[in-house]
Length: 512
Image (cartoon, helix red, strand yellow):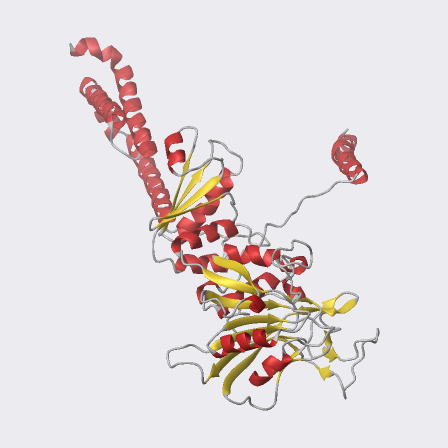
């Protein structure tokens, strides 16, 4: 029997080697020992054992000869190399480090998202319903991978609703591209797929309690429903993405301030409050209220009589700064001077398209303990111009306020009405509402969005949300005119080939 098999020993050894190698490849791909791995491994091992039985002399010679010694050294080196590479791969898979070299950090999570993920106290599962090969699914998967990499409490999976329609019906998914967030029995769905939408979804299920922000109406304030340049619709959308409820409040038609109010925003009223409204406003603040107040330059303040009790006032001026403003408009302030505060920590420069100054009185207020801090101010070259009728702004040291001029302040107010377990009232004051209008709120070059939202988060004691948010991706589309297209076509199709041809002719001419 052995003599009959010897002529086929080479084929037996070859098939045995192929069987063992295929078993190893299958295990590396599947990461599990099943029949697809075990069967070729056993058959390959049996065939290799039979090969050794049929040709023992050849095996002995191969193992003891000169070539074997050289080959064994090479084999040891190869095994060592494979071992080192395997160890590096093992360490790399368990210690992942990514470096984002893009100018605007397009592939990195924002500081606010990282802070929210660090503070998660319960698991969040994200399910993406995308058809196989759908455009954009890969980008969303890469983004979710970053969330899961940073926080073990975040998990995700992708499901093709065409292949698993029952699961799609269970989650009430009717459109491709839906992301479903789950945590603690709470579910939220969204069609958005950028970082802002995903972080908002995580917040809605991980922190289901929604604080309510009211915007004062009835006095010509900026409207949260207006989508034009002067409206506050972008503010409303941004607050809702941070898991706030947003509503309007008219103090003239209610006898009390709503009990569910987390903060009151007053955006540049044009007419004064009624006496009853003033009383409700002061009672609200005296009892630990939270107010974000903005007034624009160009008209008398509607709130100076109410703020006087706290030693704070708006000046009747317009702030200018020749050293830090937009080109050809010294009243459009570019603010980069911030005092240290949670609201302004790491904040980029902000744009104030027209602002009045805010000041703290020299005399301490009666019956109140007020801790006032400047948030933002101009440079030394700025001043508060009090001559609003003149077209030429000049610093009058006898009338105008010399720089640096404060344009934003925060205050914590204690009063006798507060009980021992009540927190002090919080007040954020801006000498401009235009900085939060739609035309300036979402400008990526400035930090207006972060400045406003951080102010609201500080008022509502949501310090975990105070940080720098993600920016929309930078549009780097190149628009080619006919002349530019012709220039590119000539340089690539004509000039480069001619240059190569000329170089070839020059070399041939020298060598002929």
